[in-house]
Each structure stands twice: as C-alpha cells, then as structure tokens.
Amino acid sequence: MKSLWFFEDTNLFKILCPHKFKAYKECHNFDAYKKQDYIYFEQDSANKVYLIEKGKVKIGYYNQQGTEVVKAILSRGELFGETAIFGDVKRDEFAMSIDNTTSICPIGVDAMHDLMRDNQTFSLKVYKFIGLRLKRLERRLQLLLYKDAKTRLEEFLHELCTDYGYDCEKTGDKIIQHPYTQKDIASLIGTSRPTLNILLNELKEDNIIAFNRKEIRIYSQPA
Image 1 (cartoon, helix red, strand yellow):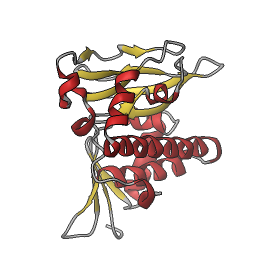
Image 2 (spheres, helix red, strand yellow):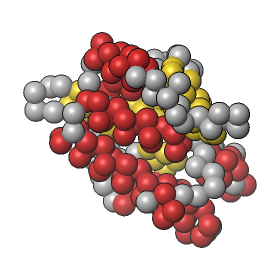
Image 3 (cartoon, rainbow, N blue to C red):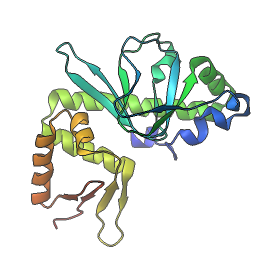
Image 4 (cartoon, one colour):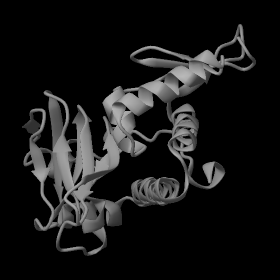
C-alpha cells in the first residue's frame, strides 16, 4: 500500500488552497474555529470540501446507541469533506475543531472540480490522498471489529511511524514526533484514556517504547 499510495508531500495546503490560484485568490477566505466548534453536522448539505491551514479537526459519527465513533483526527494540510467531490449531497459524519486556533479553507465543490479539471497533477495528488484515507479507514474499522486494544495500539504506532517517524542515526531507533494527544489516540483506537495509559506503560516496561507528550521512541532492540 505504501508504494502504491505514497507521494512526496502529503501536505495538500501547499498545492491545493485556492489562494495559490490567481482565478480564485480574490474571493478566497479562511474560517476560524475554536475548540469543540462544529464545521458541519451529520445530514448537512455537502457542498464544500475543506482544507486545514492550521489546528486539528475530528471526523466522526454517532452510532445507534448515541456513542461517538471517531474516524480520523486531521491536522495541517489535510483535506476533509471530500465525498462531496463524488456527488454526495448530505454529510454522513460530523467535523469538529479540537483546537482553539483552527483555520479552515473552504472550497466550493464547483471550484474544486474546476481546479482538478484544469490541473492534472493536482487532481492526481487529490485522488491519491483520498485513496490512502479510504484504505486507512477500512483498515482501522477492521481493527476495531476484530482486534484487541493492544493490537490496535501497535498498528496505530506503526501508522504513526510511517507518517511522522524518522531513524535515529546513533541507535537505529524510530523517533515519532506527532501532533496527537493521548485523548486523540485513545479515540482513534477505540479505547479509554486510562486503558491507553496502561497499554503504553506495558510497552514501556517491556523496553519496546519510550514516550512523552509529543514524542514516541520505538527501540530497534531491547533497551
């Protein structure tokens, strides 16, 4: 999957945002959101896609029992609401800011179609981005249904390593500098924060990882 869907820069803000395009620059603006502000609700009209300039956005839905299910937590450069591109007229999820300084670039569906039609390279990057998102979501849902919490955490750490990890030259350890809080991670792997703390500390005691608030180190060999 990595070789199929990987492209050099997943930060779409650098290439997508309409202020980069002369025809859209004058009418382009950003919307500001505080923590727990909704960008859209389930069943809202799907007439825009959104790009994150800064901050973080939670994507999710409520199941029949009224329990929140978190599908993704997104940060700078990521796109959401993308099903509108393919003709969806209603939202089947909500989008909520989880940062006090979230800034969003809204893009009308017609403008998005124009941008994609006029720039083939840009269009390809968008489709690759969406394809990777769908594959990850499918994988995450499979884990939630069939795997225990520890396995889900291990898979998520592997995903973080792909997205944010780099090799420590001296030790060969993987260093992951990521934007997620423990609450974010717990939501994404479908467990409680106390359970996540227990699992992280078990991995730490087994000398598999070390971690702090913003960094996780995966040891190349037992510490």
